[in-house]
Length: 407
Image 1: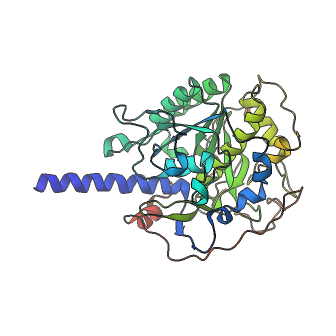
Image 2: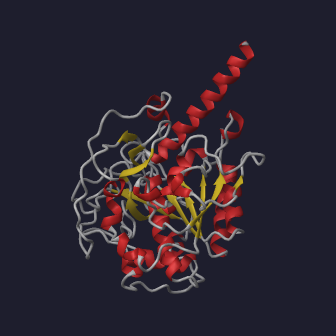
Image 3: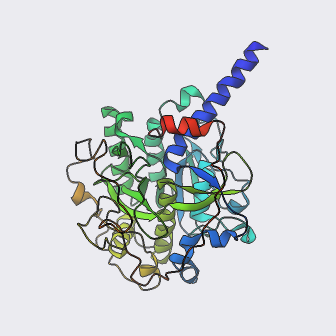
């Protein structure tokens, strides 16, 4: 009996630890008001003029590899969208299961079908998801997921997936020198295969603001988060490894650990929405490769109103896929050159006094690092949500505060 109880306690501890790790990149979650429809809660879809874009492109023909905790295929929003995939940490287990919900939530933001108006609608609703599990479900397998990430990038590079979504972030001190070299080689291989790689910048912008990987790897587009005013969020890690920004605050997702839908924030969500935007552009231009889609995303992004480009907070700007999908703006350029590599010629970023340990103050609303609402966005005002108590998942709030730099 005692052995059984110990096993239960051990399993519970592992699950809670994994939840805390993923919350570090997803951010805190709060229950949403029920007065609004789900479509109204997804304010960023209106801001991006998604309905107009869907008349031209829905992401059909594009597969997004989601390197995460797995994907729950029972979610109504993902019915018929999830491919077999692979668990790169525990090969005997199916990638089409998700012990905590993070990978499922991310996949819904990319390709959710809306579940008849009751659920999450992805920005690229006709894209498909290739689930690649990089987080283990046991203490031993979940201790260090960097090797799993490396293997997953290579697996995705050899697959039919065009986009590699990495809504995760490892602070530099969690990646040793050997792993960093292998991670960069895996990224290089994926880029050489024509893939587009996007990764969250992390959620510690107000505290340690550490450099994170794979966002800081050469050739990967690091994604930070903006709010409904298109202002850079204070929580997003910032620095030279940020390439683009996307909506990442007040984003509805399926609640983790309970039924229903909750509002959330984090660069995980921003990365997923950026991947959805890339899928819309790529589906319209199926002969392009990842370098060309990324170049167009960078050219059409909403630039900072003041200050240098790239910005430390939003990189080359906030994604605006409609400029290409609806107006054919942006030049794809060379398929052979990743547009980020020249700016990262020194190789993968490494810690420095200017980039880590609270490198600079977080931006304030209207600062020079934020993007004004301009350039033809529809300007629809998002409805405010009534927020209740913060959801505490299995003691996750305490663990989140202690381990928020983990990922």
